[in-house]
Length: 431
Ligand SMILES: Nc1ncnc2c1ncn2[C@@H]1O[C@H](COP(=O)(O)OP(=O)(O)OP(=O)(O)O)[C@@H](O)[C@H]1O
Ligand SMILES: [Mg+2]
Image (cartoon, rainbow, N blue to C red; front, top):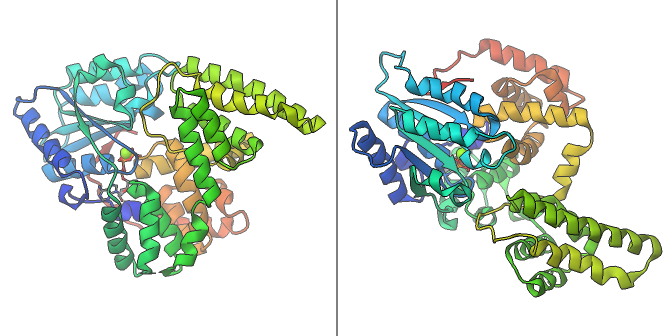
């Protein structure tokens, strides 16, 4: 028993749902490239999380019998590292005599743009220009990348997966996992996923462990109305240039200013990519915080208007231009959980890195989406041991999830690992 997102990852391009034309163009371009006919040397697959970009690239290499040289750009910090990991492999002939060729896959290219450690994107550019192999880049937000970088690539957009298609996949997975699921419950999970199949499947697994998914289970998982209204308010404050609209969003949200303050300050860095915008937004937030403090201490509610305006209008006008990207806003508690102690944070980092390698996701996503799922799955010792063996968790890692039974889980996991015959994977990892 492993993670369903991995177990049910589409094996072929035709297994993927949604975006049919994009998928057809993906194989067409790769073949054009191999015949020396491609106009661009790289393909940039972009679109929201969980829409099938990584899955498409994996299926493509599998179907064509190409070796995949894969790296996750956002986890590779510097120019040197990008070149070491990918550049070298790109210029090298294959060692595998059966290989029909290679595909260079660089995930999360939008993650390396604008970092303080320069040159990552420059290194990727160099690889595109010099590579003899097709280069496939993945990003959530293509429009945040510099125009001259985009000009090197053919852009292929992955759209959010349609709610009905998500539902179809969930039904198929539930049936194959022997989960008796209420149609209405699956339908709610599908709508809630907002086009992100990964999160829908993770939710299904989280709820379906007991063998059934009922409506009552679903309602416990999802956002309360008040949370939904926070998401709306955040989107409105972050996306608008108008003070009035930002203020309006705040009043319509029905949340108390302190709560809203936490949500805004937690999420503003996800939205505002430009450091100058972010600095300006935090400047207003810190002022707002001072007013909130005074209100708390002196119960002087006349100051509320200032606090509210600074956090809504102040943040809204801090950006020079509107960000078009899609942002999945986060619950502030998650960060509080990660921030509790440094040791714990380091451990979260290590665990996330292990998940990231196995599941082709960034460490950030591993922490926000997979750790909560594993926390749930670790309640049962046998399953915890299988997962630990799969991810290669140490006893310390296991203690993070299950402090009391970690030793036992670890012992069983070691046995499972010793017995397992390592399956041959279709891809080459340079890590
Ligand atoms: N189009 C799809 N058809 C079937 N399953 C899908 C599809 N898209 C996503 N999935 C499921 O969701 C999981 C995650 O998808 P994938 O890794 O391809 O997303 P992604 O677009 O690369 O997201 P991210 O931008 O976060 O990297 C897959 O393992 C698979 O189980
Ligand atoms: Mg991906």
